[in-house]
Amino acid sequence: MNPNCARCGKIVYPTEKVNCLDKFWHKACFHCETCKMTLNMKNYKGYEKKPYCNAHYPKQSFTMVADTPENLRLKQQSELQSQVRYKEEFEKNKGKGFSVVADTPELQRIKKTQDQISNIKYHEEFEKSRMGPSGGEGLEPERRDPQESSYRRPQEQQQPHHIPASTPVYQQPQQQPAAQSYGGYKEPAAPVSIQRSAPGGGGKRYRAVYDYSAADEDEVSFQDGDTIVNVQQIDDGWMYGTVERTGDTGMLPANYVEAI
Image (tube, rainbow, N blue to C red; front, side, top):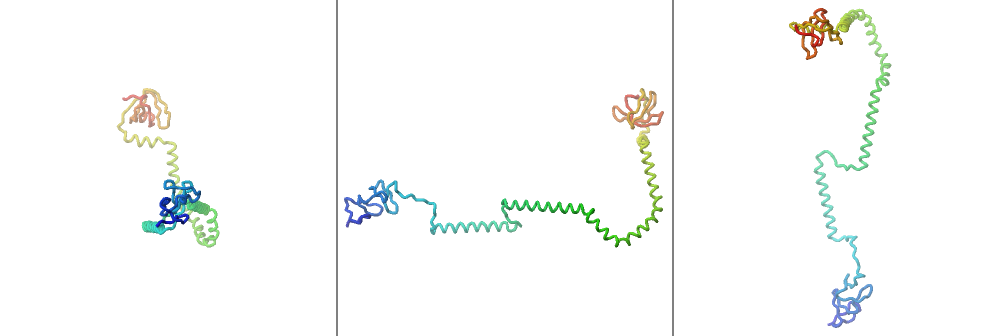
């Protein structure tokens, strides 16, 4: 039995039959759906079981994804995986005592503002504490004067009794350091000579071969022929000793004397 044509519905005989796209066509009926150009088995393109030429073949766009059961299953599975990871991260950070907060620009701005406010408050408290003794605390003695007058008056009455007794006590120690300091300024070389000459009692004796005038306070002056006793060598150029004629003790140049 001969089949019917898919386009015109008439009987298709074997001499003009075209079997394509699961249908039977007449050769003249097998043409493009848009431009009606006759097609053959080599140049046709099928779309939804309809023939099209190459120029008018519908182009498929995959910008939209249909909510097929498979896509819905994948979407649900990805959501479950994200929830599982979130719970894992939460359990890991649960015992660490801190919460993870992203450093967004807004949070950084708020943190900087809080730091500035804390610094301003700190400086205000510091200025108040520094200015407090002159301003705030100065009012408290005026309020306490009537209450503390009974405690201060006995002390003021006792001060005249202690003044005559304390004056001789303070005058004696003041005179002693004054005498010591006064003597220290006038004769700074005397204690030095006593301390340094005592251990050097067995020092060498030298005789001056030139006249020398002291250029500093710790030096001694001598004349040609003077004897210097208790001489100690300081370095290659200087010695320390006592001029026997004058009794002065101090430093002297080594190239101005010779050993006896």
